[in-house]
Image (cartoon, rainbow, N blue to C red; front, side):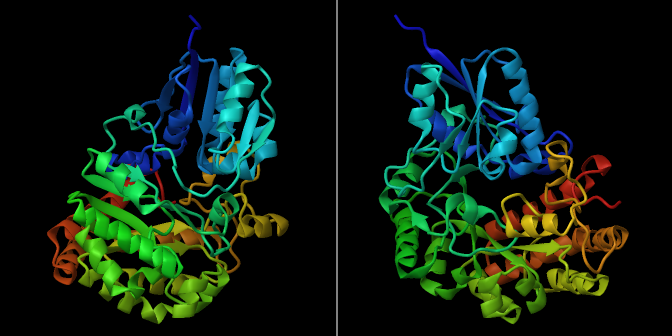
Length: 450
């Protein structure tokens, strides 16, 4: 009888910062690795090492598959080195390896560029023959019969089940690498397949990880409505969060059914409240609508019983202390329910990274070691109109205002009043407390005052 080969899949975490792993409610299972596990034939025994849950501990393997966001890339290389020193071949994929494949190949045996489903059978077959290629290029497939992840490999500590209904984005914001990785064509999974997967989940709490669950255009709108209505008709009784663009507020019927289906919070990449800042980052949809339309957007979402998580960026080239204080005023005084601040971060593969690299404005360039700084919470470039100290002073001032407990309690009361939903209020208040914990944990984590 042929002995099973051992595949170890690794989800590394940036060990220099605690990040979202501080809170169990803000950690999400490694969906991509779960999908690869489900595509792996029974001739392989599959195990998952997940540093979201516990630090890396070596396990014997015949092949290792590893993925990483940019901030965890160096950690991924450290783990890869451990295996290669023991004669085990390592394959790396995911967004960072796809954007920096030449770099990754200095640390691993093989790199999968792009979405891996189309090439994973070839990777395994070549590994069995000891003929791994250096590069495999995944294709952007239609999302029919997409394999559900091996959720049995995910630790039960995860509070949310992650589900994907679509890939790709037609927009091309300067700071975003989604289009480089998933393409500009928006692809949706067949609604029935998504509903069947949702119905199989024991989890009550879900996170739709799509960049925009509502989609773009009439056909996407129809499929989103079909999904939400199907969840209600099948009486799934799920509670969930999602990401979307501000066009989610264009259709009251879709919003109503999203709320009825259990949507309690929608993440909106608002970035800024003034048109100059939106123009700078090429946030075209927000520019077209105008930041003055934000409150109308929030009002429509609230009427469906859904809270708004508004994500804002600090550290754009046009930012000044006065502009950032106005951005803070908007966050605190608007009807946004959950407030997120990230620092403008040029990630590899984006137009922003290329421009700042060409202009010599990156502060950390000793790669791969310095990738740990690129975590959306640290200034890694020189802004045009702010010194580093000026930016951190105003960020420190802003986060103390935004995450002051009386402010968060006032937000919670506002959320309940506007949505009429205790669940939406609870989701929003807990999310704000999570962001607050990110700042205060260990006294030196994300967005801590310098």
